[in-house]
Structure formats: C-alpha cells, structure tokens
Image 1: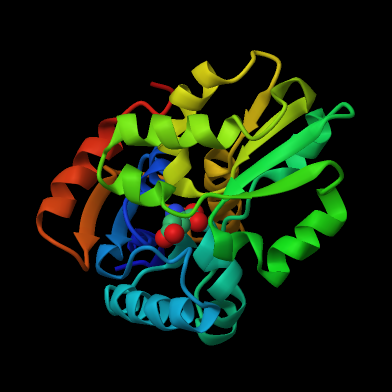
Image 2: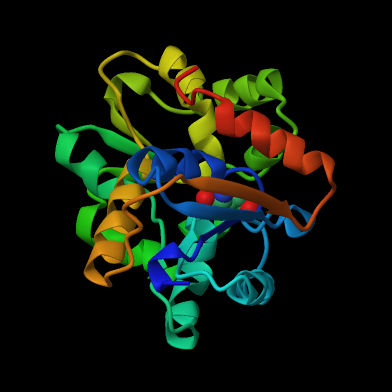
Length: 254
Ligand code: DGL
C-alpha cells in the first residue's frame, strides 16, 4: 500500500476531538481517519504533565501499530503536555492544537479576551509563550469539570456551568472568547446565544484541518482519490463509540 493510502491517527482524552475531526473530514474527505478517544483516562486537563505524557504514549503506540501516516493531537491539553516529546520520538508528522488566541488578538479592540481551557492547558509553558505573543488583554479562565459535562452530553449542566462562569466577568468589556478545549466546541452554539453579539468566538478546528492538509501536501502524503473512511475507537466503554458517532453528526453551531 502506498504511504498516502495509510490512515491518519487522531486522538483526544475523550469525545472532544470529534469536533476537530468534523473539520478534518470536511477539508480532507478522501482520507481514512482513525479516531481514538482515551475515555478511560479522561480528563487530561486536571492531571500532571507527566501523567498526560504517559497516557498519550499508550495511545500513540496503539495508533502507530495501525501504520498511521500522520498524527493529530485533537486536544489542546495533550498538545501542550506532549507534542514536543512526540515530535522527538515519532517519525511521522505530528499536528497539534493550541487555544485560538492569535485570531482573537486580531479582532480585539481594547477589551478583554476570555480564554476558556483546562487548568493544565492554561498553565503550560507552551501557553505562556502564546500569551507573551498574543496575550494582551487575555484572561485565563480554567474550566475544570466542563469537559465531563460534554462527555455526559449533559447540555443543561453545561449551560448552568457556563452561566456561572460568564457571570464573573463584565461582558461589556469583553471582545472575544476563545474555546481552548476541543470539548467546548460542542458548546459553541450555546455560548453564542449566551454572549452579546459583538463578542467574537474563536476555536481551532478549521485551522487544524488546514494545517493537516498543508503538512500532508508538503510530505507528499495527501490521499487525493477514492472514498474516505472513519473508524472510532476508545479505551473506555463500548457505549462511548455510540456517543462519538452521535457527536460526529452533531452541528457544533447548534
Ligand atoms: N479536549 C481536551 C482539550 O482540548 C481536554 C479535555 C480534558 O481535560 O481531558 O484540551
């Protein structure tokens, strides 16, 4: 089999990365994706960096056995914790995700940017560097517990959680909200309805899909013909696959 025909491995701590997978399928419909949700080890965002690296190694070992041609870390937290290590250890291209602070900084007037992400993602060196470059007016908003509500598809619980978060800020002074965790992208429509219209919401799924396409093209790995395929796998319960399937079909703007 030619290298281009090989699958692309995509993973997250659970179902969050499915939001990024949706964008990848739209951008690269001919590709074969294997999505792995490490649900048994979720959440990553309240663990220590070393623990996350250990989880990620297990996931990538599995995916490498499937002869993937590229790896997408569809998780801001795991990218911050492990992208550097993985790029050193793996021989295939590794594409990561980071909170979409740059596009938020571009639309900022003189107000605040609320960056919603996991506690670990917001306290990593990688995020500090991003803050140095684009962080004027940016406020870290750690949302421990929010990914679990998405995992449970508990949309009412998520709404209540977010109402409490946004009540802490003067939204008249906010220019942008960054969804810095792939799970939160499933709450985009809900968040849109909760915020004043002038606040711009940014997230990284389309940018990641475009970056994947660029990297594949540069490495002569693009599959340009034939049918695409998606396989869903989990370290958790078989029911998690059904949940992933439902979320794959879900319109994130709903
Ligand atoms: N979906 C992951 C992210 O983008 C994190 C969720 C978790 O805490 O595991 O950061």
